[in-house]
Length: 398
Image 1 (cartoon, rainbow, N blue to C red):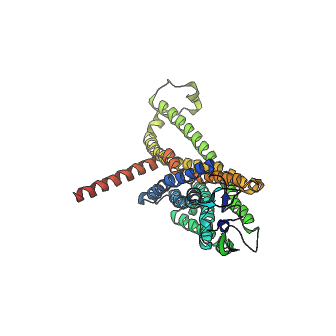
Image 2 (cartoon, rainbow, N blue to C red; image 1 turned 60 degrees about the vertical axis):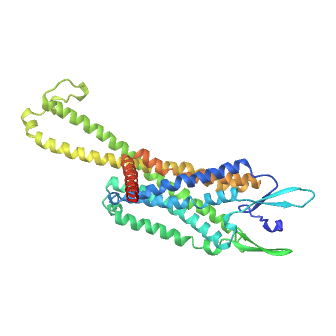
Image 3 (tube, one colour; image 1 turned 180 degrees about the vertical axis):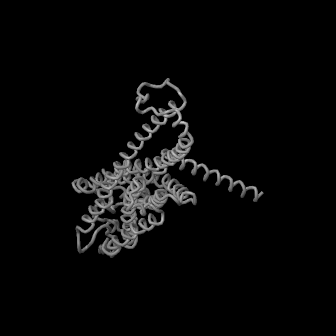
């Protein structure tokens, strides 16, 4: 076989090297494989938990479930390609007297056909953009729900949440259609025999097409949604602290009222009300029944608020992980990457930062598990149900 027919001058795809596969690239590709192996079942569990019937009434849980579905698809875009490129390599004997030995050929999935090139790139760009904007919408949805803004309260309903998620998805599905038409071309190389090489992430008529679009993608995928996430999560954090202060103040007021009603005086001097604030014993007894009712209602609200706070904390930590893990990749691809002239180093750095940004799509299960007790309870119930059904099947077989 003519080895020269496999040479591709593209900076992103095929490369021929006279040395073995770098150890760093192999480790990074193993990490890509681990992201797929760990992230896939974790995201499927998130989908199963958040799409359960008892969780369907919550709009933010619907968003979390849909986000997990998108994350599961994301793990099979660039990561699968890196695993294939680093582990499925071909070696050819070279007969040049000056360079004796084996030639190592690395080939991406996109090189096998123009159709695969366009489908994989279209899926990757679309899913990444959709995922980041669904997360941004989740922050907006959560803030509107907590603040109870009258004009926008309808957005927090589950039906409208589903409609908006579908609109976001459809928008990016349509806006990226040009990739299916313009991305890539077949390059014919004639050397003893005509060979067709797929030039992916390039356009024969517009050489800078994918360079500019990748920058635009990073702006849409990372920078712009990060602005929304930063604004609304800052407002959410502020709301949480304000609510906590009100809760502490409410407890102090309830404590003062309790001691006054029962005639205790062994309280902190700061909690003792002034003479003008002390009411008669008769009026306190008269209001005791209403106070009990108010206390019951307040307790219920506090419980619901605690549940709401856990979901809000989950959303905040997901946002933090998204920003920390994707922003370095955005800077790299936008400014630094093109300045790296060594192709081997460029590929290694690209692989590292792509894995870094993809990590956020594999660890959200663990954020839900740590932050939300409801998620943990649903998870354990799901596991128990699975083993129960498995045991029933085994008993039926016997």
